[in-house]
Figure 1 (tube, helix red, strand yellow):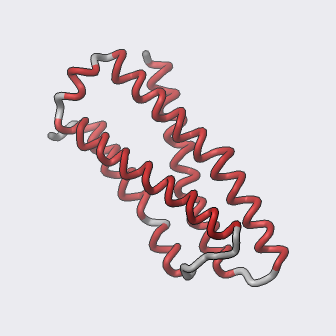
Figure 2: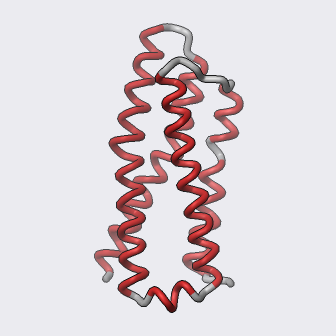
Length: 141
């Protein structure tokens, strides 16, 4: 069980590394105006999203659900902290998928946001991380 918990945390860190870095790449991409830089950012963003972020997300979810089932799903599902954590996780998945939509917008040269917007957008995963970790560690509800 400790190995599974460790893998869950490792994959979560991997996923969040991508969630923190991809919007930062979007900031620089939005500032770019030369073809070489734009093409480079498109490659970096695609590799990060599909090669690191998405596998990290999937493996985080698989390990987390496996842990919950192995430790008694009914016991977890009845606890408010766990329900809130799952709700935040669904919102985080929405953020992840929206990053994919933004990636497609950049890929097809239809970005509509400024670098300042991406700087603010980049802060959202921090809020999710803090809330989810506090819920998981303290189980306050």
